[in-house]
Amino acid sequence: MGIKGKKILLIRLSALGDVVFNIPLANIIKNEGATLHWLVSEKGYDIVKNNPCTDKTILAPIEKWKKEKNKLKNFFEYIKIIKEIRSEKYDIVIDTQLILKSLIWTIFSGGKRRIVSSSAREGAIIGGNEVIEPLFNDFKLHAVYNYFKFAKYLDLDTSKVKFTLPDFGAETINYASCLLKNTDKNKINLGIAPATTWENKHWSKDNWSKLIKDIDKTKYNLIFLGTQKDKDLISYIGGDNYINLAGKTSLCELVEVLKKLDILISLDSGTTHLAFATNKPSIISIFTSTPKERYSPLGIRHISLSGNLKCQPCHKKKCPNKNNRCTNFPPEQEVLDALYEIERNVIKHDN
Image (cartoon, rainbow, N blue to C red; front, side, top):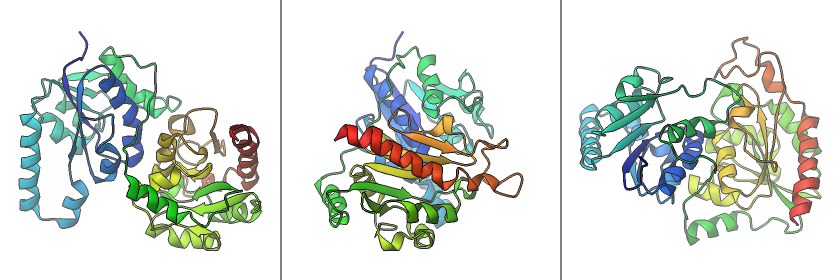
């Protein structure tokens, strides 16, 4: 029957990486001639608002509600957003969050067809009136293709993976340029993003220190990326001796900095997935507890590494064995070798 002319609501509130991985699904829906609205929380709002993949972005200010803890005020704001959603009279609502915090939005959306997956948790399956096959039941299927299961259910063409990002404007671009004004134009811009939110997704800080020490500084401008919370880690591994942007960029500004990198070394993190969406730097991503097949940047320009231990991937925030052994692997030399491989095969070829 097709979805041309239909009005569709996509519910993916967070986290940042998963919001990024939903962009290709949104683009497929748009390319089929549907009107797409996206309900998102603060964590992904800046990359969804004004993104060509959406016609309208609706903010669910979940993080603000958590901080304010004003239940009455939050309730009235919540009801106001629900009324806005219901007034749109959606033909189809797709919930890719599939947990309790998306259930309420889905069930009260007023959508004629409310599509969820059988792998929904925390009772979220009751929000739908149509249920598709499980998502993420195979570590080896990439997240993008997991979300494509919704498109396949609607008989849409899933042959193309298209990432888009908003135009953040001249002011943001200029700010990013100013942050990197002291780089040597004759060197390769190498980003280092050593932190993420899960303890068990971090790589050993001593491995980072050794890597930074061994990188040939005559070839590379080292540019460290992170939040205010990451400053101590970046200082420990030597980032203060180079361009340290920890805590100096908003999400939009970070995207513009990533566009100016040639290579990024990072973890399974929002920064990695944003970098991939820019289609600019080659990415060396280090995977400890999470499956690289599911979350790695796609394409031959990127290299993903892990320790290949028997316990990997556990996909746990805290180590089940309580030794965090996987965070010590891969060895530093493997990452260094990957860096030089990309320099030889990608950077020199591009130049």
